[in-house]
Length: 333
Ligand code: ADP
Image 1 (cartoon, rainbow, N blue to C red):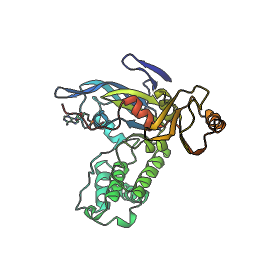
Image 2: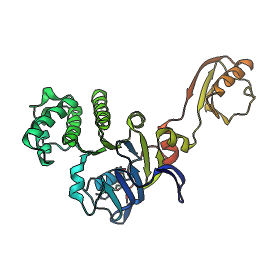
Image 3: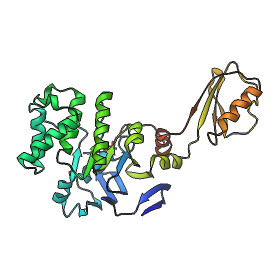
Image 4: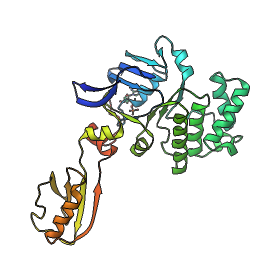
C-alpha cells in the first residue's frame, strides 16, 4: 500500500511505498572513511516498475546501486531483493540481478558475441541457452551485424549498447542501470531506452540512475530523488513536480516597453526577464488557464505582443528546487 511519508528533516517528500516491493531498502547507511554518504535511506520498488534514481553528482546513486548489486557492503540498514535478505543470501540475489555499471565493463579483444557469451555462462546459462540468449540480446540492441567484431573496433554508442546487453543476457528479474546512456549518440540512446522499455514490458523491474531528466520523464513510472545520501522526494514525475511547488511561467515580448501596471489582476509575480530588454516580461502564473487572460490584458493596455512562450514546470525545475542547485560535482571530503 502506498503511504505518504513525512520526513522530519525535510517535510513531506511524497509517496513512499510501504516495504513489500521486489526491492525493499530500509535505513541504509554507508560511509567512506569519515564521509557519511548514505543516511538512513529507505525506499521500495514494486515488481515491474521502472524507477528513476535521480540526484546531483555525489548524491549517492552509484553507492546505492553498488550495494544493491552486492558489490559493496552497507554499514547499516537492510536490503531485500526478490524475497532474499542481501546480507544473508547475496548469491541468491545475484542470480536475480542484472547490473549495468557506469564504466564500460567489456573485454576489448573479444568479439561482441564472445563478451555476451562470457556473461551468459558466468550467470549459469547452459551452452544452448547462452547461444539463444546471446543472439536475442544482440538483436535487441541492434548489434547482430557486429557480433564477430572485436569490441575494440566498436563505436562508443555500440559499446554502451553491448554493455547493456551483457547486463541483461540472462533475463534478470531486477535490472540495475547506472547512467547507461552517458555520452552516447542520440540513435544509440533511443535504442537503449527502447530496450529498457521492452525489458520492463517483459516483466523486469528496473532501477535506472541518470542525469537526463527527459529520459526519466519518458521511461520511468516513478522517481526517487536523493541528495547528500538522503531521499528528498519520491513519486510519479507529476507528483514530484507538484511537490516542488513550481508554477507555470509566461514570457512575453512586447513591441516596446509595456505601460506600467498593464497587468491589472495580481498574479504571483511579474519580473523583468533581462534588465536590458525592457520590452520583455516574465510572469509566474497560478495556473495555465491564466494565459489567455494575461494576453487579453496586454492587448487591452495597448501593448503589442510580438511573441510569447509558456513554460510548464517539469522534472528539471523540480530537481533544481528540491536539491537547491543544478547538477554539481562531488564535493571534496
Ligand atoms: P553519485 O553516483 O550520486 O554521483 P556516488 O555514490 O558515486 O554518487 O558518491 C557519493 C559520495 O561518495 C561522493 O561524495 C563520492 O565522492 C564518494 N565516494 C564514492 N565512492 C567512493 C570511494 N570508493 N571512496 C571514497 N569516497 C567515495
